[in-house]
Structures are given as structure tokens and as C-alpha cells.
Amino acid sequence: MPINFPEYGPVFNYEELTIEFAVRVNGRQIDCAVSAEALEDHFGAYSARADDLLHAFEHGRTDIEALARRYLSMGLVGPVLLRSGHFRWVREAKRQEARR
Image (tube, rainbow, N blue to C red; front, side, top):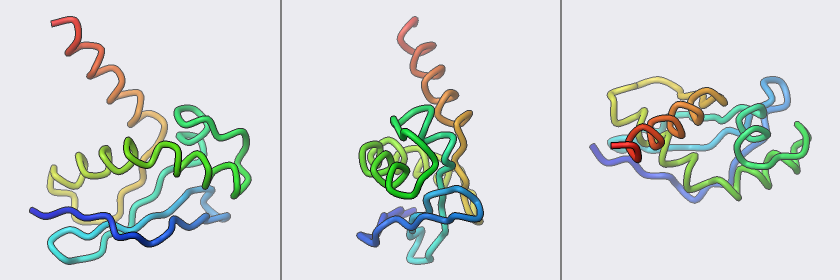
């Protein structure tokens, strides 16, 4: 299943306090977003202001897209909202793997 991230710029959603970004799965666009909380907790956003969140998104884009790809590879067909706990889960999984 091909999963691509178009070069569209991310967009700040002030109502949901998220940064939204596009993903194409099998040629179909899926809306994805990452919460302000996740960007503050894991990618260094100083506040929930648009410019801080967009900067943090760009800083963590590789990890954010990797996690979105991981969820979409599980067969999710709807929008994906990545929250802080999702990134903690990844960090813990890496820690567990390193112990082996």
C-alpha cells in the first residue's frame, strides 16, 4: 500500500489546536493531524501559537510522518489524529526493543 506525503504545507487548525497535514494512501487523500500537546511535549513547541506549532512540526516532521505511516499501515482508512500518548508509545516500544 503506497503511502505518500505530498509537499503541501501543514496548516494550523485554531479550533482544534492541531497542525493538519495531507497524506495519500493508494492515491486517496487522508487528513492527518498532530495535537498541540504532542508538539509541545515531544517536539519543543513553546506554546500553542500557530508559529510555534508549525516550527515544531517542521522540526519533528520525519518522526511525525513515520508515526502516521505506521498507523495508516495498520489499515486505518479515516482521519488520523496523533496525540502525545502515541509518541510516548513509540518511545516506550523503542526502549523495550533496546532491552532485548
